[in-house]
Image (cartoon, rainbow, N blue to C red; front, side):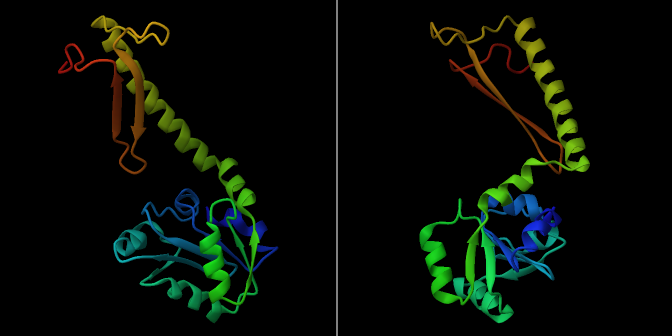
Length: 195
């Protein structure tokens, strides 16, 4: 998905991604900590030792650099001689930006909204993944709805505060396709829950 940043790379030399949502979208890296630096010529994922092995498996189009300290990133930026880098100004903290500015020689251009918009427009591959996830979710919901009806489980009423079943959250594993159903109930047990 990193290719979706090509039009931003026509305006600047590199893009620095720090948001975990964008990091996952553009690199497939699902770890919690990291920074992407994407330029016209290379894609680098900086992360700490807890995530390097995972990053190498998931972010196959990226060179993974184990980041021991902040200067590993800033030294890399300086060594490449970038003059201008696009950042997620809607995500990056002021202190993080100030640290970057203090330790590097390039300018930082806010492109957060443009970067976020790249996730909104879906490719045909993404649309197919979404459709498949929706089908799985619909099947899980139908199964649970059948259970509720067959076992006469009451549905929560916001106005009077009565009823057992309040919410259902369905999560689907991206890679495993495993389904996790989370029930929020107004009580301690679900009747016939072992069914």
